[in-house]
Each structure stands twice: as C-alpha cells, then as structure tokens.
Image 1 (cartoon, rainbow, N blue to C red):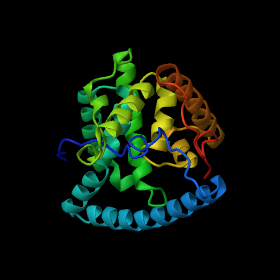
Image 2: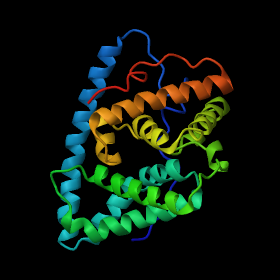
Image 3: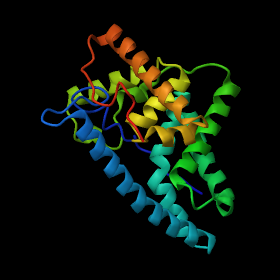
Length: 239
C-alpha cells in the first residue's frame, strides 16, 4: 500500500510549557491519573470498535478501509521507527514495510487484541532489525528541530525550541529507554500497552520507564538546568 510522507507525530507533551508533562495546579496527581485512565478506557473502546469494522471490511475486499488504517496510524508508526533509528529515510522505509506486513498478515490478526498495538509491535521489530543491521546508532538529524503533528504552524518559537530540545535529549538515551519513554509521552500508551509493544513483562516496562525518566532528567539538567516536576512522570503512571 502506498503511503504519503508522514508529517510529525504527536509531540503534544514535548511542545507544552514544560518538558514531559508538568503538573497543573488545582488537582491532585491521583485525580489526574484517574481521569487519564478513564479517558484511555473510553478511547480504547471507541477505537477497537472502529478497527474491528475496518478489519472486517478489508477481509471482505474493501481496499479503502486499509487506506483508512494507513492514514490513521502512519505518523505514529513513522515516529516509533524514527525514535529507534534516528534517521528519516530509514524510518520512512520501516513505516512503509510495516504496512506491507500488516496487509499481508491481517487475516491472521486476533480481533481480541488492539490493532494499533499489533501494528506498533511490527514497526518496533522492523526498526530494531534495521538498527541491528546498521550496527551503530545514528546521530540526531535536522528533524529534531521540527514539531510533531502539525503543531509547528500554531506553536510559537519558544515551544518549537523546547520540542527540539526534548528530542535532542531523548536522542542521547539508549534505544530501549528512548522507546518506552516516547511510547508513553508522545504516543500516550499505558505501561501495559508498552509491555505488549516491546515484548517485555509489565514490571519490566514500568522499570524501564522509571529508568528512562531518570536518564532523561539527568541528561536534561546537564544541558538545560532543573527540569520542572511532573505528576505521574516519575512513577511512570499505571494501567
């Protein structure tokens, strides 16, 4: 299936007033976490129903429904690949190959699973394979100065600069920590979803996320000074 060149993905957390989600006055961390869990459950139910209809239509021969899957998830898949590879062209190749693999294997997809997590897992595996073949870490590219998901058009220079700084610091993290942190902060995945995508246990996903935050904080403070306190960020959240 053909793909348009993906724009930047959802760096909403990075483009905000403080890196990786600063606290908001007036509510407790527990209130915010409960609200996030409710919102995630509601979104997941809606998404699963829509994905089930798409899969059924595709298996019945409706090519337009597969185009909808590509349009919905190509940016997210591109950025998962990019956050592993740190290379624009390789990330595009991985994103393209991901949807080729998805299309070929869709008849074996288990409808009890989340389609997006399954697609993300395929992308992650392909990107890791590409990284192993290359046998070296790429260096950050000019993409680090761009914002995700069209926010560049509406964000001021200060927000753009901060988003670039966040991605530059993320690029310094080992790939396994960079991946879990970007899945959580940029793609909104809960630790259990991260565990499924990265092929590890739930406790391991939480530990990696906790470790990734510590590494990010240390790298950020070395470059830019004290990082504002976060709500669930230090604990990695739940669910």
